[in-house]
Structures are given as C-alpha cells and as structure tokens.
Image (cartoon, rainbow, N blue to C red):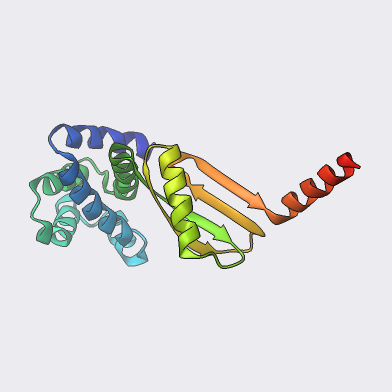
Length: 177
C-alpha cells in the first residue's frame, strides 16, 4: 500500500525534475529513511502528542542543508496528510526508479570461498552487456557452496552450485558409459 502511495508522489516529482535532481532527492530521502531504523525517532513520529507541524519541522531541520524546495514541499505535504511513515517506502521506490531510468543496477555475489576482483568485474560487464545496463557487483561471503549472483532490481538470480555441477558431471559420465 505504501509503495503505491509513494509512486504517486514520485510521479509528480518526476514531472518537475530531471534525472540529476531526482538522484539528489533520492539520496536525501534515503538518508531520512535511515532515521526510521532508530526506535526513538519512530516514537517521536508516531506520537499523537507531537503535532503535524512539529513533525514537519523535525524533518525539515534534518534536510535543511540540502536547500531543496522540492524536498521541503514534499515533506510538508507528507506531514500534512499524516504520511510521514511512508518515507522509507518512498526512498526505496525512488531508488528503484532511478535505477530503471539510468539503467544502472547494483547486485551481490555470494560464495563461501573468496572470489577475485577481476572475476567480479567480468561478471559485472557480462551481465551488463546481456541486459544493456551498467551493473555493479559487490562480493559477500556466505555459506552458499558455489557462486550466486543476485541483481534484485532486475529480478536476476544466477547460481552455480558445486554439488549440482558434480552430480551433473557424474550423470553425464554414467550416460556415456
């Protein structure tokens, strides 16, 4: 539900902004969304004794250094309609929208063994050319026995399991005999 509401606000923002301005606004809202991980902040925002204007002022003070009228107006509008709680969803939808607009995606490579930076670069460029996009991958050590590449915004997940490859090799040899 929050995502649908956020998309309406983003649609209005996109009409009056170019890609660079949207990227700046996205980074501002991403930082604001981080504040929602703080329990004290959530208590203040959800407190019925704190007025809409006070909540608005708290958020406006947080983004004052950005000096963006679009951000200020959006925060005032969200506060006026009691929708401050959708800020994290707004930030995420904006991030995804920018990724689609710029065709620039981030992904993660999982493996239980270390992978060289060159291999990760090759995976990035190979996937990027396949999807006509710029894909940046980062390595994250996990318990997965093989290699798994996940680019969530594109809906792409590729995995090479060592145990599955071994079983397929054995099957192939058994069929050949």
